[in-house]
Length: 377
Image (cartoon, rainbow, N blue to C red; front, side, top):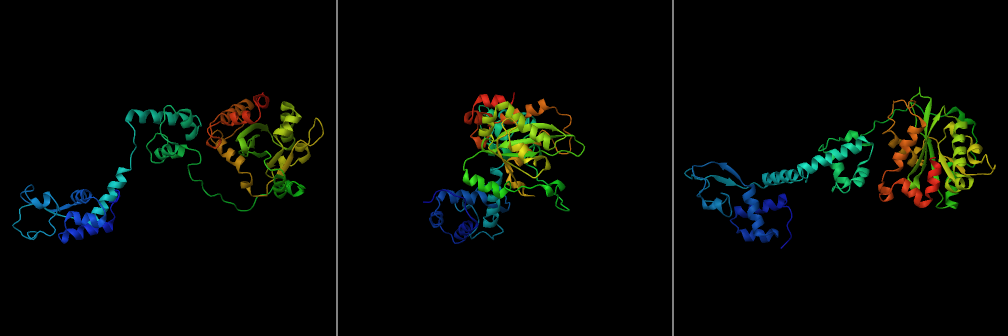
C-alpha cells in the first residue's frame, strides 16, 4: 500500500467511474493504491446534494459506501423521498485545492506570543536592524526562522510592512539620457592602476585583503559627504564625514589612518584599495605613499567606468546606509561623532555571512582589539 498523498483529478475520475460501475470500495482502493478508508472519506467529504427530500436520514445507500445515488435504480424515481447525492470528480478536485490553500494560510502561534513577536520585530526595525539581527539578538524569545518572519511581513501579518524593510521595495529603473563622465577623468593616467591590473595583481597575491572605497552620494546643495571604506572579507566598515570633499581631503583620511595605527599596521591592514573613478580618488601618489616614510603603503586600483558591480560590497553598504541617510535628505546636519556612532552600530550587527558574529568580533579575531580601538579613538 502506498503512503498517503493527495488525490489527483485523474484518480478522482477513477473513483467516480468505479462507483458508476458498482465496484466495491476495496476494488477501487486497490486500483489506486490507497487505503479503502481514504477513498471512503474522499467520497463522503466531497459529495454534493442535488435535491433535498423529505427524509434525509434513512437511506442506507448514502449512509455507507458508496455514499451517493450513482448506480441506484431509484435515482430517477420521482417518488424517492431521500436527499440525493452525487460525486463530481472535477468539483471534488476544486474543493480539495481550496482546502489545501486555506490549510496553509495563517500562522502557527498563540495570540499572546504573536503580540510579543510583533512588538519585537517593530522595535528592531525602528532601530534600523535587519530581521536577521533581530532574530539573533532575541533568540530566547523568537522561535521562528528568519524565512518565516519574512513571510509574516510579506503576508501582512505583522505591524511591520514590507515597505519598512531595506531593499524589499522594487526600485524603479533609472532614466539615463547619456553616460556621465567626470571631465577631470580624461586627464588622469591610470596606467598600472586599471581593473585589469587589479585582477592580475590579486592573481599573483591570492588571499590578500582588498578594501573598497566610495562616497555615499548626497543632494546637490550639501557641502558634506560620507566616505565608505569597506573590507568585504570581514564586512568591516569605516565611515568618515568629509566637508567639501576633494583629492586633498581623501588623502588626509588615509594619512590620519596611518597616524592612528602606525605605518606597519597600515601596510598589513590595507594592502590594496579598489575604488571608482571619482575625481576625489585620483591622487594616486597621495593615497599610496606614506607622508611619514615616503615609501609605498598600499596599492590603488580603479574600476572600469559605469561598472559598479566590480566593487559590489561597498555599493551594498551604501544601500544599508540609506536607512540612516535617506535619499533626497541633507546630511549637512550630521557631525563626525554622529557618523562614528552609526559606524559602531553597523559594526555591532550580527551577520549571517559571518556565522552570526559581528564585524567587530570578526575584525578583533583576525587582528586584535588594540588595533580596533586605535581606529576609533
